[in-house]
Length: 427
Image (cartoon, rainbow, N blue to C red; front, side):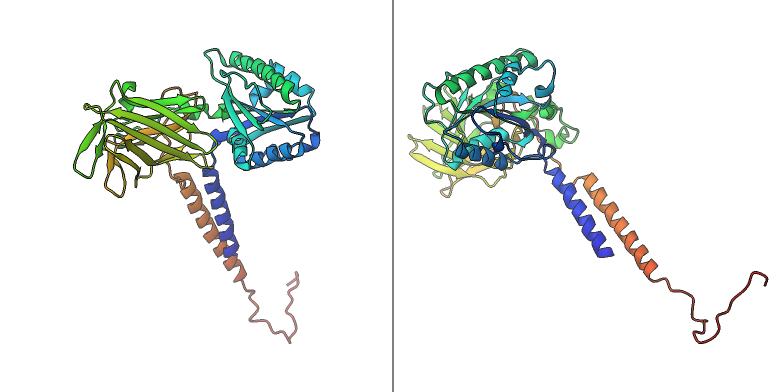
């Protein structure tokens, strides 16, 4: 019996570890509707279960392939919650009128990174275009399969902001319907409202300890390299300027001055973001550093390479780092230790006092870094306690079963061939 108990403990431990991988920030609601698509294209899913990003991509792909030249018009709110669709009075009165006449109506309350799932349709061969609500609507959308419209934040209260977006969604949907006649509307968000607390929470004591705090808490925005566009922004900060070391012994201090420029090259479909910082030294030498950010399907971003270019110095090379510069989306990477990028020719860019960097910063944060990600291992104290208690219970349970199986009746004095001894009540 000990072996099955051990298996049970292992299953429970695996379940606990699996829970630690959950990324609640990327779970967002998705509303989908359409006039000319039959209801049998509705996504068959359990509303109590979370839907993976790839599953949403596959579902929309099937709708496009089974429909007659549809346009997927996806509206992406910065923040959205399940309650936004059920609250009374509702801010989405116009959207409610639209979906009341639709043949296809699907609601998924919990989808991982739904906006990324729509963007991933570009990898399936569909033409995806992304604009902002401040951009003019495309004059010709005949060749577009998926049109993503990012809705921006405003200074109004949340209800008023959603009401404005509601009117904009209705007008934009009808405008697209006039051209394509078959429009599949999708409404989702970048992050869920329930995760806002994790974006604005204060750092815990572990994060505020002297050894973890460093000097990044008290920086000035004039020392920060920041650039952005409609798809977000990226920021980089170092306490001291980076230094460029050349094989011939020359070195250049890369300081931020009035000539320094910062731009962002955001390649949505390839999930790459490049922060280009152009430095000018005192003698007029131009030095360009392109910080290349990538992200994966697990909502983690990475900085592994820097592209260095300087026409005057006749240098154009790719620098890599041995440091693990990575974090989850909406969180920065921060280290007070030296970070070095180098190539095989010993061209080096060194951040001697460490750096703080974050790509794909959501509009919610504005021009500021997100909160530091909690440096908590997957096997937390609670998980270890659970495993320890399960091990003790498994041992006790096993010993108990063994003891029960070892019980023997006291029959060694009985004679199987003789008469059974009986004692009556009168005796």
